[in-house]
Image (cartoon, rainbow over the protein chains, first blue to last red):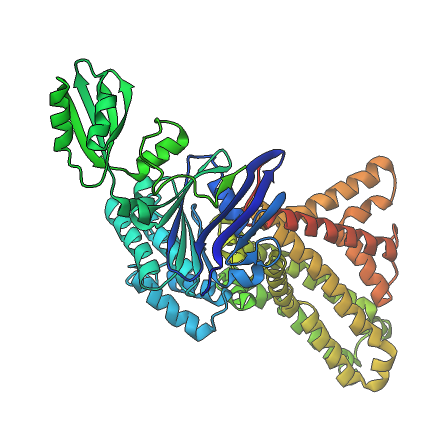
Length: 330
Length: 263
């Protein structure tokens, strides 16, 4: 069984000029050939794009090592590049070419014979919804169409791994849905591994199986979203008036844990099988007046905010989320 | 496959096509001249001194080369930026370099196409003229003058390398096709002007060494056995051209990158 990681980093450091952007990252992401998506999340300047550019061999590591699909990013990229498709964040096209000529050229550059490249170019342009516009010059395309053309050139040669940098940038809601559907199809139906770099949590949550959160050039969190979804833990936000001093001690009675956030606000984690009614009853027993009770599941947004240090650590986590044992940020 | 796409892109530009066609006028006239000089009966009415003056020799080929080299300058300025600037203008380089294609392969593919296109109007018609002269004048002329053919091809290739690299470097820097073409032309005019200025201000003759057109002319003269112009010799001029080529390669190497790092 193939267990080659899609991305493997060993104490990777990258400097741009005098600044060190990536500070010694070590991690293994995804497994090659499994058709899973890994999301790379982080605020601007966290080092996501630098990491992607290093993985593609565009930037050199100042120390450590990076491998993609088992190939060394500094030396073995010739072979690796024919197995990778890359969709950059910014505009990237040849304005005076028709979409079909552009995609065909990119397919040929990836090693497809001319006839096969032409056939695949037509197919993939229909697949991404540009079939009718495929003979138009790319400079006449709208932003959304250009995004789709970029996706088409990234997948035309049927790569093992597709690297997507902010794929939904500038898309309207309908186009965004279509893009996410296409990404899901790529991994589920065509078995491609996908590495998605985005600052949109919902996009990552919707299409990815793993998520890596970066901050200040280091990985601060790595979670398995599949397990997160499976764990199905219930989170409750509670706001009460009255003396809530005894609530913390009372919560374990129903198997729950909670942290006070001041001014009668609480964040509570319910164990599986315990419904939100138990909180009502508990509040009643404590003579508390419930002003707000929000029942929701743990979201990637919460994981992200915790990783960024914007909200307090929620008790009860760690079953499915947390810094994975094979991920360290030096 | 990159050159195949590049050729197609080249001749999609009508001006390039027009200039290429116009560039064949002078070789046709030269072919007529060669025919005339090899048919003594047609020249009988002319003055003897004039008949001796119109010879197919190094001077003839050097004049042919000057004219075609001029066309080549304009063709390179027109066509060169069309090969690279569109890739840079729309940030397409990351798409190329995320595939099994190195920067050097990309640059070499573009260079090959440019040199190939310029060859069509320079050394290829030159070699045809040389062949025509050999055919009409016979093997003895070839044995006595084969160095003219070799010198012409070598001289043209040297010039085409400079022209192509200038066109590539200017499009790598400017990114906008029209401006890149202007910069490409300005490169030669400005260096020629600066060289003239150095010579006049410092009252020297070595200033022309930085003028690639002057330097290549000096090298051509040496290759074709024509008297040199006053100033630095052919060897010094060849070194100066090599230095310009090196400088242009460095410029291209710095600019043709998938990502630009601002430190």
